[in-house]
Length: 228
Length: 295
Image: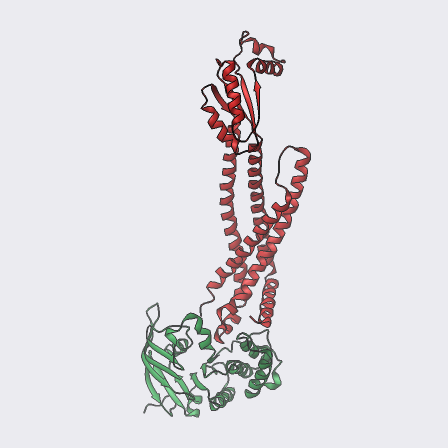
């Protein structure tokens, strides 16, 4: 699903974000990416979505070499992945279901398909009762559920989450991770960047730890800070 | 493109227009005023061209004969003039007739002619008119080489002077066009920039969920086209009214002054201005989008 081959990323200001990173993440995996701030976690995500290009090496998503992709093909790459952010990034003047539908409208899906699919994913994230609420009337956890619904509405192969629980309290965070788990069970690869030790330990999934741009740990059933 | 998508674009464009209504109105006003000034220049140049052309078609050549010309010479020149192409009429003025005309014109100041002491310095001449205005200059050049001919005169000084004025106005107009175009581009791109800024979250989300660049671009392009179009229409209406009024009032006070008639000239000018305004609208919005389209 995802393959990093000797990937390095040096920004224009000379800071090295990734240093010779090689990774393989299979289809249907659930992977945590952990590490201190500035360890290169965000860069990893930006390389996947073609927001940044690697200085060296190659990045493959679903067999496509992202760093060699023509500019006009980038939107079609992004349709294969859903991205969830720490700050939700919902449109404040649209209701929950309009926010979700927006992701389908901009790729010009037929209206009937949109209506059915939006209800389906709102149901999946447990928000069907709040479909018509505006973001400001939803709790943080609910807003993040809307964001997750929007990320998966176009049936991506890969769901990327950048600190999805960073703004949420521990109980809500657990609920949110349960949602990710559910989506993962349905076959979607999940890549979650997080600082949340409790979540990582609780889930007992594969953990990749970055430090100073290098992979320092890659464990199949790891905790947040296992040393062995 | 799907109809629903077009609907989305249109709604988005009008929303932006309304959200930034102050800047929108300012852009429309700038476009309208700039294009109106542009239109005035186009009208001025067109009329000057028309005037010069008109004048040229009316000119006749005066062929002055040498003082010692015999009657045979005079007749021979007359025949040769008649035989030239595109000549309409040839009229002979004897040097004594010319003197009579001068005396008649100067009868209020008799002292001046006394200075001639009864001599007649005026040459005999032929007045030649033409069926084709283009024949004037050509004929004047041929006739000037006749041995019996002293010189020719056809008001070339006036025409050349007018050509000079038209050239100056034309260049001034081009400089003004460049300046006004930049002003229009500046204000339209700034207005669209506000819109883009207001929608930056939306744009970012669109990019993340895989909207194509053209899908994102269209609403802004439409807004720019719309601003340009409205400005252009206002300028067109103002210019039409202005020119219509100018033609009517000039015909009343200066009836001899030839002017390009309102139709079809105004329609063509209006069309050109409208196209310019929309092109500028489109370019203006593209400029301000460029920075936000990366991600």
